[in-house]
Length: 71
Image: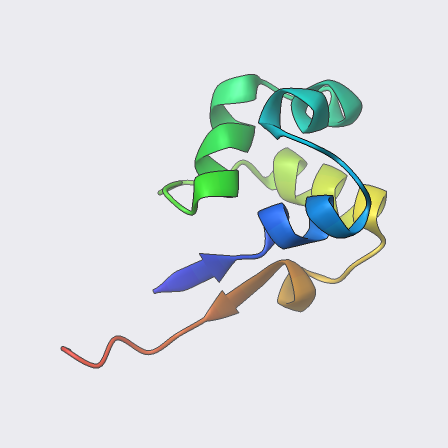
C-alpha cells in the first residue's frame, strides 16, 4: 500500500484545504483530492512533479510504501 503525505505537507505549510492546494498547484481538483485522501490509484507524473517542487520534497517524502500485513 502507498501512503501519501500530501495532507500533512499542506498543513505544515498552512494550506487549509484541497481546493486551495489545487489552485496553488494549478492542477485539477479531482486528482489533488484523491491524493490528499490517499485514494488515488493512478498518479499523474505532472502532479507528483508539481507537489515535490512546491513543497521542496523528494518523492520518498511525499509517499511511502507500507507492506500490507494481509498479503
